Image (tube, rainbow, N blue to C red):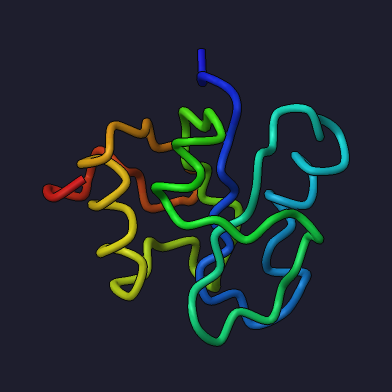
Length: 107
């Protein structure tokens, strides 16, 4: 079971369509989304509070959900710093990308 509530990771999504996973969670389970995490250059906005990891943790977030789908469904090297920091902060990670989290040695 993926623990709720979630911080929805939008990364550096180039457009709102790229954040379709996070959009679905926000639309269908809004009570489970405490906020969004957007990196510089992110063009998606779910109209949720922009939170860093510490603020999301203070709001009760337990899982960082990779809510963006990029070309090829891979974990972007640009995202790694945030994902590793989330693990260090005690978050669980959830991702539906083709590139599995368990195949990333640092995650």
